[in-house]
Structure formats: C-alpha cells, structure tokens
Image 1 (cartoon, rainbow, N blue to C red):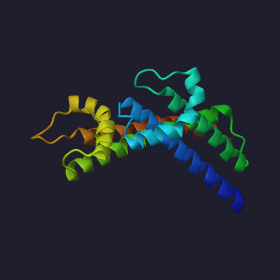
Image 2 (cartoon, rainbow, N blue to C red):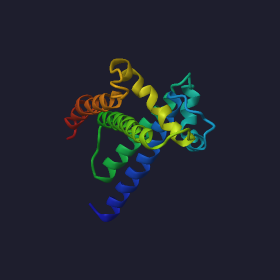
Image 3 (cartoon, rainbow, N blue to C red):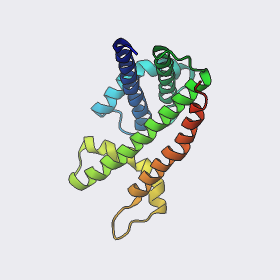
Image 4 (spheres, one colour):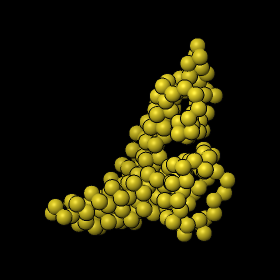
Length: 189
C-alpha cells in the first residue's frame, strides 16, 4: 500500500472516529438529561446538529433518546468502512459493512461508558464541592451506575457498583460485541 493510501486511511479513520465519538457523546448527554445550556454540551450540539438534521426530519427526537445521533453515527461508520475497503483494494459486502459499523458503534459506546465511570470515580476522590464541568461526568455516570447500585449495596459507605459496572461493560464488549465481530470476520473473502 502506498504512503498516499496509508495517509488516506489514517485521515478517514481519524475523521470518522472523531465524528462518531461526538455523535455518541450527544446520544449519551441527551439520555442522561445533561443541561444543554452548559458550554461543552452546547458545543457538541452545535457541531453535530448539521449531521443529525436530515435524520431528525425522518426520526424525531422523543424524550431522552436521540436515535438520530446513533443512526447518523452508523451511517458515518458505514461510509468509513466502504472508503477504507476501497482504499485497501477490498470490495466489502453490504452485510459486512453493516456488521462492522454496528460493532464499531457498540465498542465506542461501551468504551465511552467505561471511561465515564473511571473519570467520575477519580473525580469523586479529588474534587470536592460543586463544579459544573465535573457535574457532567456525574450526570453521565449516574444512569449507567443506577442499575448496579440497586444490586450492589454500599459496603461500609464504599460504593462498589462502578467496579461491577466496569466488569459487565467489558464482558459485554468481549462476549457480545466480539461475537458480532467474529461473525463479520467470517464474511471477509
């Protein structure tokens, strides 16, 4: 593969990864009911609005679930997969591109959940008092941790639910997403 093709691959992966990251973050911010007046949240909304607008016309946002953000991320991943295959001289089937796109979205979503929990846990140890930038991490982590907090009660005032949540997230990534990815690898000719 020529250096020009390698550069193209890098740029496509970087641009698609950044866009998909912002779209998934938009989905999570809305799902967690984070205050849309916060400057960081407003920035993410303004950057992603042009991408989500066409799908919002077909699939209106209802309540806390911004499905247009995830669907847009899926389309971006599919275009990226097609372009990566084209640059690499591969002709990927529509099924393979779909499976690849779904696994990439799921992996990024689960990775984001993992890091939100880690960052929130670390911030809880070092930041005392209210800080609006730190509050975003608490707001994002709370819906993820809530089901685990119902199952794992605090022990001597110590909340162990983040550890259990991280274990479950990583298991889902390995078993579920890994199985879907393995299915896709079987389609590569």
